[in-house]
Length: 414
Image (cartoon, rainbow, N blue to C red; front, side):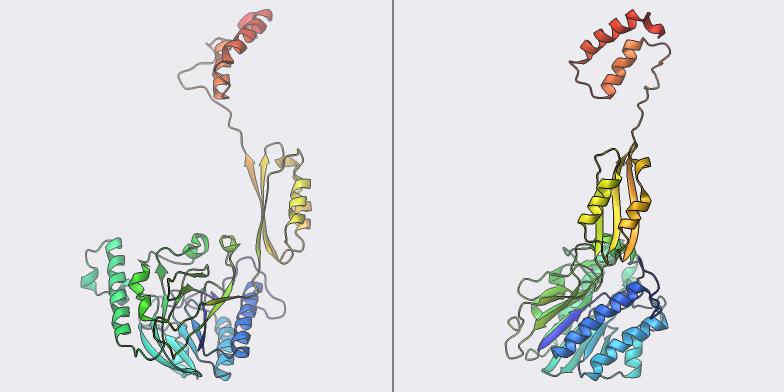
């Protein structure tokens, strides 16, 4: 039995993009859908038994009809190929008010063939081409969905998070106790695990409020054959024996993910073996993702432009989202020729900007209790030398030379 696991599409995230003249979509959305097409094509060609999505379909909780249509096209292709797909609800899929439908609920309402939605905590039995599979789903949980008002009363934020972890852990343990041990079982959860790699720039900007972080042990991975996680964008396997895997996002969101590979995982599960020995090592499959490239330069010459252009030529900027960071002195800054820099970036997918980090030299000031108009010039020079970190043993020598020069030119009235 082969399972394909992916997560965190965030369809509709459109930073660093422009409208596609053919489709009308943003170029970033178009690129994401193309990588999703790679995944669907792989699933069909390799005849996987289940496609498991671990949450966050869209960037917005109220996605546009266009974004919903484009995702539905890919779901339909899988269904028509006879491949079941499990769709878990992530924090971006939740409605922003009680009683409203989630962005994925439409698939249950329409009874779309071979499509299963995990919008509530619970277990679903999925019939795959290689036999049945039990999927315990834990969608993104808010405090109000886990705890009653009386339980939340007088709890601190840390106490609230701990109570949510405890309750969720008890739920997972209870569900796992009811599983048929002779049928493979997978835990699908959209949450944060302590100790996992997190891209704070992109992920914190896309998550509202605070949320609990779960220990791996609270997920009871030994009760399952595979743990399919969503929420954090770097792909990673946190498991020790049983795979505990974040599939990661399918496209880079910003420069915080510049060096991350993007794609999906597959895992082989042998139903004939006992739990704990059924899973092989998960395999990561990269998809085509728009590269992010940072060109950072500290020019040494008076004119910084030639060194900046050389650094751009050494970098692979063709088809990439590129930013240039230049560390300049005050003298170099006015000599930088922006037009030449931007021309050199002409092959980039998107020019994310040229940042000038200019070193501003602060002019030292006398302490408030010192008065330059009444102090001897030699004493003022000593203060200056000490501010400039001149070695202490050099200062008396410099003072002697300074006194001689001042005296030769008429004293302190210079």
